[in-house]
Image (cartoon, rainbow, N blue to C red):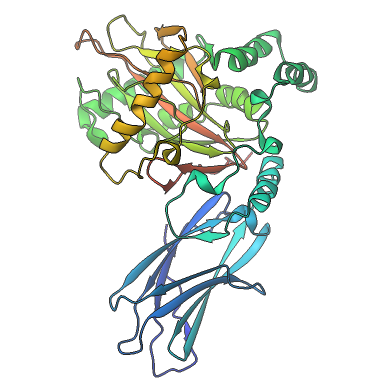
Amino acid sequence: MSQILEEATALYPALESPLINAHHADVARPWSGLAEVIVEVQPNPGLGPVTLEVSFENNPTVFAKEIADPGISQVRLRLHTHLLPDGPVVMVLTAKQDKFIWDAGLSFQVNNSSSLGLAVRESLQRRGTPVVFDGPCDSQYYDYKDAAVVPWFDRTDALEYLKTLAVEENLTQQEVGRLKDFLERGFIVMEDFIDKDLLQQVGLELEDAIAKKVHGAEWGSSKRIEPLHTVYPGIRKLWKYEPIYRVLSLIFRSTPRACQTLTYFFGSQQDAHQDTVHLTPFPAGYMCGVWVAIDDVRPDSGELEVYVGSHRLPRVYMKDAGCPKVDGDWTQLGKLVVPRWREMANQHGFERILYRPKAGSVLIWHENLMHGGTVRKDPSLSRRSIVSHVFADGCICFYDSTGLLGHMDPVDPA
């Protein structure tokens, strides 16, 4: 997934370029949303600090950083590709040290041409969001109050829009009912939704994962296992299951793009939480969780709990809670963010449902819905399930809790 830039052309060939290499995402596919380029710089001895500048063809510098460390410094550049033109783009990296200048170019393709992508571009322009930055990904860069990018299901006229959508998409009465549940309750339950042959295949794959301890899978543990869809074809098919994507496309009004899979053999026992801070979309709302029951869920097994209507609660971002980004230690998030979730859930008196579906049932929930895993009162009871998180094509995807870029899998070719 990385490629080394050709050595920068030096105007003074007696000196080596301080630009050593740059690792970047797979340029075989167009870039969209947030992208990352990692640049390594090593100053020539005795010439002082290097100034690293970033520009794009025939445009002024959009980023500059001084590097004084005599060793190799790694600069992690994040790009808001929405602010670049769709099509071929050349990113110019310039190193200036003393009176010397070196340049190197990185070519790639950009595609944020969906209707959502175009709306996001305009919002970023209004906000004055930088094209390039080198710190953590953070909600501060985005105008979450921008009414122009609020998804239809979070608007006050959502029920009226649903009537229009029903006509435009020729929706069945069942589909309309599901979308109305999403609006009012914050989640959709679809029973007996997964093809039984696929469900059986996934069950056998999970047995194999336990037998071989794939990715650390261990019977009896509440540990979540990632990412089994890269190992097993049945789980990968479930990850991008077309009937689920049909529902998500009606919610997003954009093409769904999967993020990851989390596989549970037993209940997670995770505190009630919003996904917003962990899998963060801009605009808000353009991410959904998908929970597929592989077995019938039994009482006392550590059932999933959902708080009906809690998707209308305020979203909690790291900056709002005064919480630093997580760098391996989740203590501060546990002290500053989790209590806020708990207080909001208790304060508003939401109906709390213990979710006990039959095998093959699917739960889709709004990005901001409060949910969690209850205590495993009977540790012997398994609760096999596969969870995925799916973003809308055209949105920005990041992880506010850690400051890292999010992942959106490419859209499968037709």
